[in-house]
Image 1 (cartoon, rainbow, N blue to C red):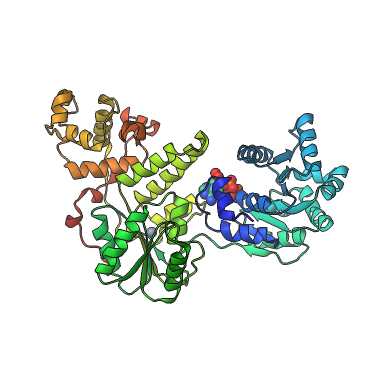
Image 2: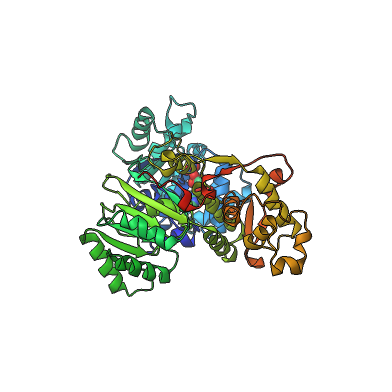
Length: 517
Ligand code: ADP
Ligand code: ZN
């Protein structure tokens, strides 16, 4: 059987599960009755779409939202999944095609509006078609007291009884009464497995740092946590080996782990990590599945993860026992360049690439956050929260400044050199350095030449990095990483909007107060 993670990647194009998804997918796939409460935008649909592919027969999806159904069906079809919808918006041909696919046993997902359940033929048809699973989206619509009550949802209980198959109900409405009503009406009061764990892992301390001698930063982080089990995630296999060696030389017990190793050697590391106290594993993302060591005390990223989902999953390996755990994620302009290039050079269709850029932007936004990181992280997954008090920015609120002027200067330097240069040369122009390249190109005659003297090379580096983090500029892999402006920068360039950046990161690391922790 295909592994869920393989399908997640190959069919849905995601590199990691979002919080909660994996457990729900597992339970639904194995045929348990499930009631899952996830915030809007949390990624509910995947929790029945993926099991639908792993289970025999067709999965019937009941949803009240016609536009949403059509949208999901289109997305599934584009991903090569046989899916169809029976809604009032269908043309006769569409409906005929869906019935035909259902009779032929080809359909994996059949979306339908609850009203369909009222029409005579539907039930018989579904009985013949071989339904393997019922998924109910917006399950709170069964609640007579809620404002979204749909009388036809009350027919779902009959459907389940008649077909005798497992049912998975999803909603974003979490209050206890609604849950009870869902259990009564959809599961006949039976006891579905409930998933309503919030996404927050309050015992995990969150921190990011701009790369500034990354090897030294990792060694310092590990040295301050000597004797405690931890994972260091790296972007490349070679780096895992080099860093593991550096840590070992620094007196830690450390080993490396990546997908290029023999299965046997990897298993040996997994076993050692599970048994030994205080081992550090320096690994690529290949290390993760199947580790359920509860007392991992820290996770560090020597390179920026792929997406905000991957970040959450990787840091989430720390502190499963609920005791305090710490994380630190390093990032720098090279990471941003690399991740963007990976997306642009990948084979994914344009819409998917745009979504991948957006997920990367979300992670960069978190890296360059101006306020509580947990609040930003949870907000991305649809959960509202207060500042957490357990992240680097809650502990040391960042110093902000109005960066409209330098950002506008930088944008102007980019445009006047027709988006053909990277941060190094742009910085030389802004500061007014006389390099061979400046002389050869006559860039000392640009009006932006020397206008940014007030900031030094390193400070401009931090400004450009934050601009990349906010997606005002993007490195173009087809131009050797030259920065190009995005539409998001237009209002700033035109003087219609200002921008606030962090000032503290403009200072040299050595000038900064040592962290209190
Ligand atoms: P809701 O919970 O509101 O029904 P959706 O299922 O529509 O949410 O998912 C919200 C968004 O999250 C969609 O754009 C979807 O593509 C995206 N998404 C879902 N699961 C993942 C994942 N594992 N990784 C990245 N993006 C995901
Ligand atoms: Zn916080």
